[in-house]
Structure formats: structure tokens, C-alpha cells
Amino acid sequence: MLYVPRSGEKRLRTLLRGFPIVFVQGPRQCGKSTLVRHALPGWTLLDLERPADRTLLKTDLQGYLDSHTRGVAFDEAQRHPDLFGALRVTVDEGRGMGRYVLLGSAGSALMRGVSESLAGRVGLVELTPFTSRELSGTRRSDRWFWGGFPAVHARRSAGLRTEWLDGYVTQFLERDLPALGLRLQPQRLRALWTMLTHVHGRSLNMSDLARSLGVTSPTVGDHLDVLEAAFMIRRLPPYYANVQKRLAKSPKVYIRDTGLLHFLAGLRSPGELRTWPMRGASFEGLVIEEIAALASERLIRPGFFHWRTAIGTEVDLLIQDGQRMVPIEIKLGSEVTARMVAGLRQCMSDLGLKHGWVVYGGKERRDLGKDVHIVPWSEVAAGREDFGFGKR
View (cartoon, one colour):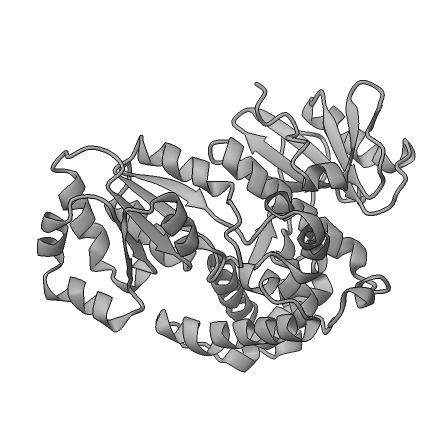
């Protein structure tokens, strides 16, 4: 498969000019090491899952860093926790910016090492599987059903794509988690992961999940933490504001890659998606991930929320950029009426927001008044809408 230019390349190069270390995080096999090889062709890439590379560092870690003062990337860096402290010593000697890159697929382990040892010394790039903006032609039309993992798009037949997704899930549960020191029951975690396909896009009810699995709610919470730290799921928290309304308190949950969502739900071909009862929720999750990826590229540490009152008035996505809020409603259908944006307008009124957006399945871009902008999904997928992220 030919290399597909990634939107994270620009951010990686920019951060290397301002930090001695850049941390590229994202799910396994989303293209992190490929990104580094293409963006930084002269660099050395050590894969810390390879015994030879791990041994190289274990033998004399500080000595290796002293003799390799820049131009080294460490893949799966969480496999060598001592690396973070050693890097701090090395970069604090003051030899400039853009010296090292860390890559990792276990968010909590790496972030803990970064926050404890490398605070103020590291810039962050979150790389997702391919977004629709990064694909073109037939691959973009495949993106919704098959997800965004590069290896999926490198395979032509539905059967081979399904085989790859099956192998990915199995490897994650049976090999990746134990390698991180997590002693979880693979069958139970897979059962929970599958259950999440039925509540994808809905408020998370821990008690219901715990009862179905025959475990306690804290155990379910621990398992969800693992899936979230590995970038498999997104828990979208509710947004609270000082308004005179009772607001929902539970997060909404999404399986981040739609290919994994559909595979775990038992779908095996794109035609099955047309009649799937969760089709609308699947589309909602797809759009949220695409917009979140765009916001993370354009903004500094954006916050992602949903907004829902106790009587069910809601907005699917709220993006916080400092003091600015961007409300976005998502509709699969090809029509958007004034009645369908009542929740969006209520949210805008309650939070004092001047503009709101609706992403929908139709083809026409238009406005409802001066404040609600109706945007076709096709324009979002093609990168022709930025939701004002570049405007202050």
C-alpha cells in the first residue's frame, strides 16, 4: 500500500521545533511508526517490543542516550519505563529542540511517565487511524463501514478485512494486554467490548453492564479504563454549566473505530449497515471521531463533551477551546428542519453561544438564520469545513 500522507505530520514537525521531545500516541497499528519513518527519514527508530532493541537500552540506557543525543524515536516506549527519567536527564543538559520522539499505544502508562518525568519537555500528537480527510476515492467511501486502520485499507476483499479485524481484537486481548502487565480475563473483556456495540452513542449505565457480566460496577469501570487508555473507546462526558436546568450526569460511550464497532456487532459486509438498527449511532460516532481529530490538530488541548438535559434535550458534541464553545449536532438523514435543531438552539441559548453547526447526510450547505450552519457530511469528510477552529 502506498503511503498516505497524514495530517499529523505537520504537527509533529511543528512541535519538534518547540520541544526537545514529542510524544506520538494512538492505538496499535494506526500508522505511528510509518508516520515517523516518512516524516523523519534520517532518524533511528527503536522498537521496544523487539528483544534486541530492548536489550540495547537495558545494557546501558544512559550511555546510549549520551551517544545518541538527537534523532532517535522509541516505539512502544511504555515497555521501558526507565526511559522517561533518563530522557529527562539528557534533555535537561540543554542541547536544543527536536531531539527525541516517543511512540506508544497505551495512553495511561505513557502519560503517567510523561507527567511524572517529562512535564514541560514534551509536545503531544495524537494519531488516529485514517480519517476520511486522509483518504480519497473508493477508500473514503469504505471508511464508514470498515473503519480507518491502514491494514484494513491495504486489503481488497471483505473476507480478508474481516480476518484482519478478528486478529486485531484477539491480539489486543490475548497478547497486548498481558504484555502491559494487565491480568484481565480476555473472554470477559471481549464480552464487555461487544456489549458496548449495543449502547454505542448512548448514556453509560455501569450497573446494567455489571449485571449482564456478573461482576461489580467498579470492575466494569476498571475494564472501561483499559479500553479507553488503549484508544478503543471514547467516553464523552456531559458538560455542566451554571444554568437553571437539570443536566445529564452520565457519559456517552463510543467504540472509536467504526470498523471495530461493526465487526464486534457481527456485521460482515457494507450492505448490512443499511438495515442495522444502530446505523444512526454508528454515523454519529464516525462524525465525532473525525471532528475530534480535526480539533486536536487545530486547537490546544480541546475538551470534548455532550450536552443533555434531564428531559432529553441534547446536542451530540460540544468542543471547548478555552472560553469558546462549539456545539455540533449530527443527523444521518438528508433533511434538517427548524424543529430538528431545537435542542441545538436551546443549548446555544443556555450557554450564550452565537453559532452552532449541524452535520447531516444531505448534499446542500445552507444556514438556518444567521446562527445555525447546516454542513453536508461529504464536506466534512473532504476537509472543506473546519467549524471555525481557526477563528477566534
